[in-house]
Length: 379
Ligand code: UD1
Ligand code: UDP
Image (cartoon, rainbow, N blue to C red):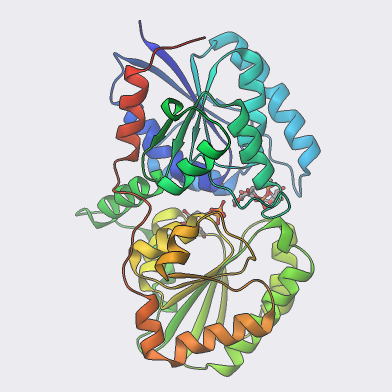
């Protein structure tokens, strides 16, 4: 009998990291009935990913609201999934990471009796307030999950400390490396043209260092983002031989301060969020990356790009230990000082920019699918 697999995701990073898994499951139609449901917690930023990976969801809850709140979003995901779970009655429900979609889907899937499979399981900061609400989301999902697919040994150890059974955990590497591989292969294939890359190519100038910036974390909304913008303004003023390129996240709590404080500065380019291949292209061209993103912390080390992380905690200690990622928080003085060091001190820059990839070999999805193939369903 075919195993019924339902893959649910809602935001840009979940889509990027689940797309190669959907493709892997769909290689075996005789073994798996694979369906995809998007909550559309994100809309445009999700659709960019679906288009690039050529995935058409079977179900689209279309939930995003402007400046949505966590209460309503959580409730709507749970109630939106109910009829779907009841009608298709999946054996396995796959969720990813730590968003509201992840946590709310896990609750709904638990009610339905499906086995919950958590991809990117076991990341922890051990601080419920940072990142907020992601630490809570992944802890709740971890409690409800039957199978935990961990990206690294460190993540596995976190789960074992929470008394998860060793046989329910598989270390796979991070599926983001599978996504990177797909992206690079597609973009470099003969005949592939990407209009977005052509549109941004002129922003990357010879002799000018490109500083790529992204940011969106809820705990940085308000004072945190004001500080980040102050720091970027100072960096732009002090380093005329550099240019900041900042694809601004669509969250209004990010758009507002960023456009109010940084629009119109000659060497700061504020642009719309980029589709995944264009963003990967831009990471490759960058001198350094300043971000509060989770996924970017995983991708940049394998591209040999130093990353300054505008957070006080990280659930991804591997690249920090390897020396390619450094936590700088949101204090403008520290962001400015660390950026200046990387621009001015060549030796320091070279130490941080060594290529390093603690996050996988691009075969995470293959391992997940093989595991499920051999798994005995205990519904
Ligand atoms: C969400 C996740 C966060 C993840 C991030 C990735 C939660 C609570 N937060 O944060 O864990 O790291 O996505 O980017 O799950 N918006 C648009 N179009 C889009 C996307 C967002 O207009 O395509 C705007 C909308 O006004 C929306 C708002 O951004 O209401 C916030 O989106 P939301 O998903 O709630 O929070 P993020 O900050 O994006
Ligand atoms: N990304 C993208 N376009 C952008 C910025 C980021 O495709 O303009 C990708 C990036 O390569 C990474 C993911 O989005 O894979 C990270 O998403 P985000 O920072 O929104 O979420 P997080 O990883 O922090 O949850």
